[in-house]
Length: 78
Image (cartoon, rainbow, N blue to C red; front, side):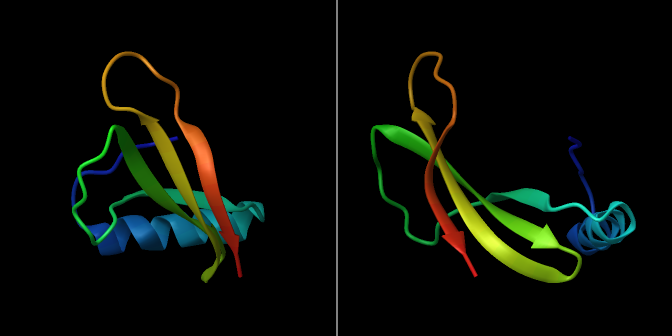
């Protein structure tokens, strides 16, 4: 796991190269929903990549207050 601060295009190209070289599926996270809805839970979105292709999307939620683990709520496969 790593965190990247800088140009997103460079980070994405490094992720694609690593997934090709090691032949693994990579989860690229940090996406937000377009709609701004206030809720009791916080959510985060991720894309699952295999090489250049996006093969799925994930949605995680956690409690907004207190200590709570992230839970996988939705999974979409292409």
